[in-house]
Image (cartoon, rainbow, N blue to C red):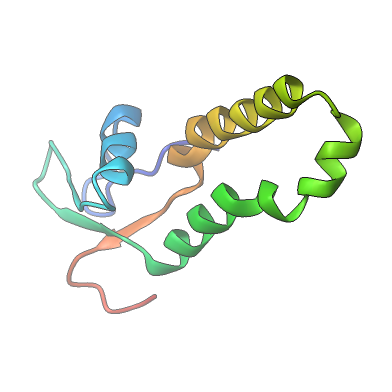
Length: 101
């Protein structure tokens, strides 16, 4: 699993630029080699949203495993850090003029 490459020239996007794009409200990424604009695919917005709120659905199960509130919170924060760390590897962009989803 790698960070996506530019569709035009094949230059791999930087991990940091994909991370910034996600935190800036899914801002398009411009290839630093050829200048092609890649925008965030809508389906991956849903994936990011589901991954972020997923622990809420398992709240009771997590509470049974970790009855101590500090451990419970540490588990949530650990999960969020892992999700944030792997997002650039999961997310895929498309060319801005490409109408295919």
